[in-house]
Image (cartoon, rainbow, N blue to C red; front, side):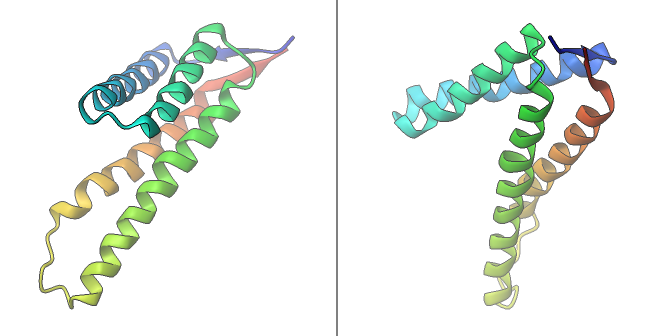
Length: 124
């Protein structure tokens, strides 16, 4: 059976901490906003954490898909939407702070995707 080897333990701990921070934030949102649609990300993040600790062979693929969809694509669409809104108003109400969080999340998603490709290895 295939297993996963983490070449860099620091990246592994950083990845676990990163996912745990988002998991705790989503749990906080469930209790403060009472929106049930936030339960789906909680389930996904919990499943990813379980797969990380059990060294399941699909975790590399799942992590790639998760970072591409939820960080690069989702925040990329937010970035483009905010840019289109500013273009429609001729940049009269332009505020660079609107672009900081989406830009940062796109950057983090790309960095994590790079490190997943470099440090997570599937071994038979």
